[in-house]
Length: 432
Image (cartoon, rainbow, N blue to C red; front, side, top):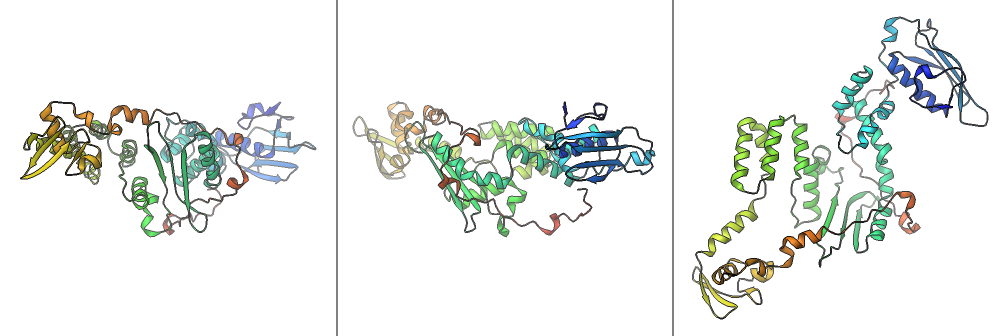
C-alpha cells in the first residue's frame, strides 16, 4: 500500500512505499513539525534519499531507495526514537516552509465563506503545530495555496482570450473586448450580453490598472480607489458606486469595532436620508475617525433629492388644458407645451430622458392619472427583473474547451508593476 504525504510516524516502517521523492520530503517535514524537531539531509539523489536528526549524537534516521523503473520510493531503514537534547528538539522548525504551510490552509481557501488572512494563518500554525511563523511566510503560503486552486496570474492571463471565446460561444449575443499594451500586457477587459429586453441593458465591465505608472500606485494599496480610477479613465461618463461588502472589509482591516460595522451596514441599507443621517450620527458619536473615513465619499443622494425637488416644483406650476392630451404649463413666466400622447415637452427633457419632466408631472397630476404610464418601459421594476432573469451558461472546465488555434495564440500577459524598495525581501537565509 502506498502511504499518503500526511502519514503518521507510527504508520511508517521498513518496506513502506511512497509514490515519489517529493512525497517523502513532505511526509517527514510534516512529521518533524508535529514532533518539534529538525533533521538534515544526508544524501539526496534520483535514486536515494537519506535523513538524520540535526544532533549528530541522536540515532533518529531514515533511508529510502527508488524502486527500479518507477517513481516509487521504498523505506529500507528507519529509526523512530530520539535520544537528543530537549534544546535540539525545540529548534526553530526550518522545515515549516511556506510551501508546506500552504497545504495546511488550502481547504480553508477553497471555502468561499471563509476569509483566510495573514493573522489567521499565523494563529492557526501556532495553535495546531506550535509554530511561530512570520508575516512574509504566511503571505507566501496564501499565495502558493491560491495558485494551486486558481492557477498563477501568468497561467490565467494566457487563458483569457480562450475564456472570452467560450463565453461568446456558450452565450450567443455576448460582446467582449480586451485592451493590451505594445508588450501584450493586459490593460482592461469589457464584456456584456444582450438582455431579454431591447438594448445592452446588462453590462459588466472589468477594469485593471497598469500599476507601473506613479499615479496608479493606488492599485497596490486601495482596491476600491483603483477600480474607481480605472472606470473613470476608460468609461468617461460612467458612475462608480461603492460595494457595501468591500467597504465592510475595509472597515475590518482598519480594526473597526463590530458595533460600528453593524451601524454602517444599517446605514447602507436604508432608503431615506433622514434614517441614514441618524445612523451616521450614531457612528460619529462612537467612532469619529471611522465616520470621517466613511464620509470621504458620501453616498449618492442627487437622484433622490432631484426627484423630491421635481415633486415640490409641480405644485408651483400653472396648468391649462388644451385638449385631452395636451397642456400648457407655466413656469416663472415661461410657457411649455406638454403632449402626453407623444410624450414630448418644449423643455425637451421628457423626450430625451423618456421620463416625465416637472411640466409633464404637473400635467399628469392635473388629470389624476398614473405617472408610471408615461415613462420608458426600461424604468419599470418588471424591466429590471427581466434584465437579470436570463441565465448565463458557464464555460465549463478548461479541459472541455474547443478553441481555435488563432484564439489560443493571442498572447495576453499580466500587469507589470514595480515593487518599491521598502517592500523587497532582503532575507537570504533560505528558510523563508
